[in-house]
Length: 224
Image (cartoon, rainbow, N blue to C red; front, side, top):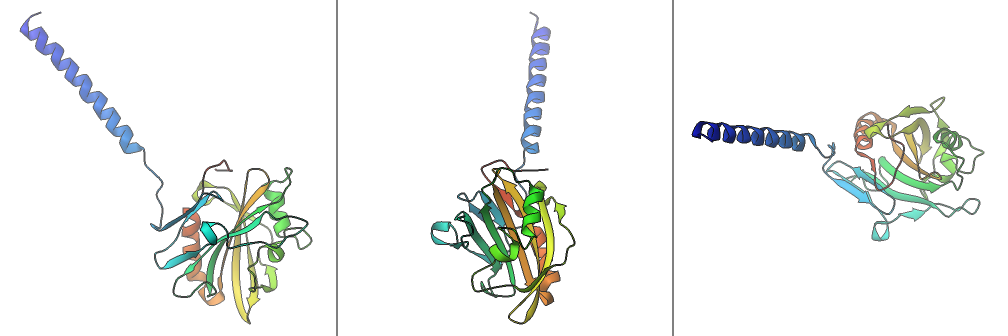
């Protein structure tokens, strides 16, 4: 092989190497991890979810990062949990704004997201929102749904049904909204976001970003 042919062959090999390296580099650049609104993040691998929250907020969880408390037993169901509560640190856990996560086993394989939502909004059901998903010693009085029907939303591409409600607590008017999704057939995940009327608008902007940062971890759930 002449020197010219050798140089030509080496040049071709180098060109191929550059192209391969460029392709690998591009693929690496394209593979990006999740992008969240908030750097602070709470991960709970017992209940298989994670949540981002503002720097000036904190999260309250129970022993060993499990549950704050077990929901009251209804019809022999011990599988309901108030998993975590997020709130502005300056206000404290019983302040004017809260973002609360629940998980509950309906013990029925026949549920759909829509049927679960209907039950949450039905005062006669076994897991009516204002009977089951309420904090101890913080009842919601004069509770009413202000949404005529539930609305589907897809924060962070996960499928939820949502509805707005209002209530009175300690003589003060509050607003709230629930987000419900399903997992592993019988389980429901529920997030309740609530604030006094005077703080609802500013708080709701934070709630929306937190829902965009909410993620299910470790098992399949419905995702759009």
